[in-house]
Image (tube, rainbow, N blue to C red; front, side, top):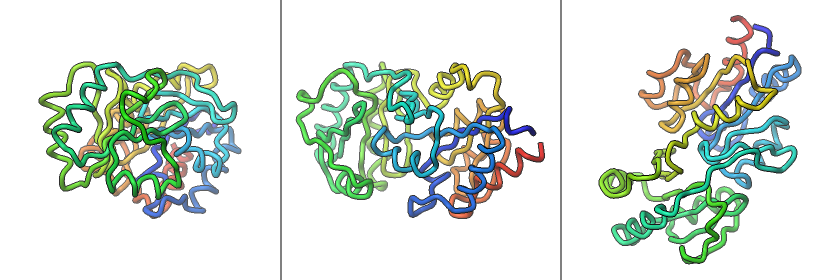
Length: 267
């Protein structure tokens, strides 16, 4: 297939990034070759602006990307939001309910370009240290209302199912919940997902009429993979994600993007 007809949208953590959060040199070369041939390469990630920027800059991505698990489309080159959807006010009610039910829970509110921590725990501390971010610690009522794009619940994996069960029973209306990793559970505006964010991305003039290949590994990637012209799951993906995919490639530690691009080349 002519690369000029193709848009690849890739998840980052667990897909393009290996377990050490690095990108394989083979994948970087393959992406650069794909882009040199006229292909468009974008990320679709749960990360916000600050957390995604290192990877975007490393790859030199010059087209808009889907961030905040679909709550925004952001142009890193121009350093501006092209579209975003704010959290509803009812999310505060749910955060308070979770804090009361689970006193040791961690809560991060990802604002447009800042991370606020309203409930701190070890999982949050490890997250911030790993991403080399310094968050702003505030009470919930002191976090700016406008510009909140998602809420991340950080909790040990062995405890997370209790949180999921609680939200399904008590925190459903007006929001969408996605399980983005074993220790992260995310509250998004109602109707928002990576699939929705990709639809907004495809509305941009340069993205229209492209053949879309989407790659991912976790539950928050499944709808995006299902909607793509070529849905791809890495070998380390959840079984439910593999079942939704048209193609399964090698795992995130063994240059999956090179394999995807070679497959597209031969189509």
